Length: 234
Image (cartoon, rainbow, N blue to C red):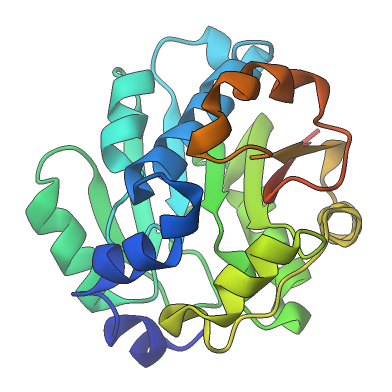
């Protein structure tokens, strides 16, 4: 993970993202919120969410796009944003002062003790990371999760042609390599995580928003624009 690669886009991140997703008819905030909402809904069915004060790790938090939604859906949680880009973290801390703690890491070792978090969340981060590093980083995330802790990994779906076009035309995805859901599951399993579930998301653009209520029945169909894999430290 190269810090300089992300530093150079930190100031323009939202504007670039907005241009990149314009065909969907949605603003970047829509994509940030849906992920956290999915996280909240899935956690409501697990033991991890039954305690009042969760410790949540936002892995690869960037400029803090998820922070206001993590605060909205998890008002009592302690949120830690981790990233390799100091510039992105500085912008996030300025925008969301007091809403989370913002920490830098070297891209290899997470600067936390074992069993520090109940939940880890990675929103479209791993396609920016060399694929050879995935299992190591998932092992590190597993290390800092408590027993029964949950990891959510959201990623772009390389089987969706519109997603492929969006990634290929995005400036900050210039070195990205997408990874399919089944392969992501295998890498999480290699890192020692269990309880793996894969669900596909984002089937309809804003123009077809009334159809979005059907998406809950389509999560096994590998054509959504994005997907998530949820895993547990058992």
